[in-house]
Length: 71
Image (cartoon, rainbow, N blue to C red; front, side, top):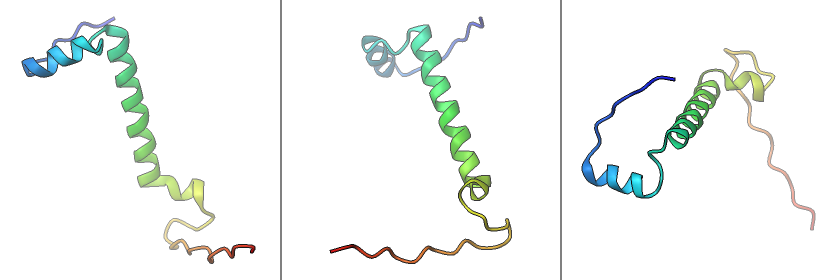
């Protein structure tokens, strides 16, 4: 376990404390969620084409033709 110290504006710290956001487990969960979000975002930004397309890296993706509604 590591201890960290952060400086926050008083009103933000008070509001976060009132909401229970400064508890160790909550901060850890928030950080894990943000790390996961950023990792996924980076993956999609820099390499997502491989997961979503069969196009080669230097070949632009082609838009699928519009789907017709059955009516």
